[in-house]
Length: 101
Image (tube, rainbow, N blue to C red; front, side):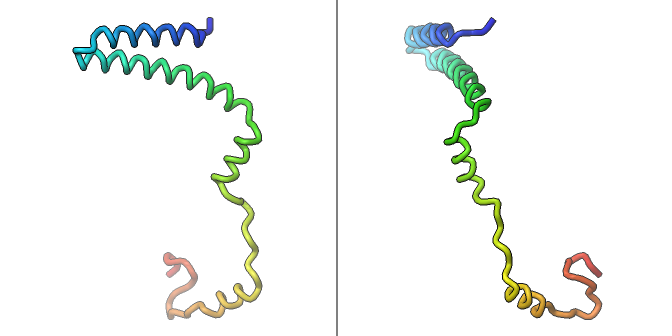
């Protein structure tokens, strides 16, 4: 049995009415507002589950914008030869890694 949004909203209204009735007690008001927040999260989680199962073009565009381009430009031959020439020979060093002894 699924919980309907209408029943969740009715529970929210009930919690808000209780908070309003106990407006003089801050701790009681906070507890009712926390309950409302939890109920809001319940509805939002249900709707995000539905939208996450159905990717849209805008979601894909947002993902591409966040991730950036996955294509990396190729290094030009001129840059590669410059990098090879700039290596320094350190006597007992065996490679480019810091851990090569």
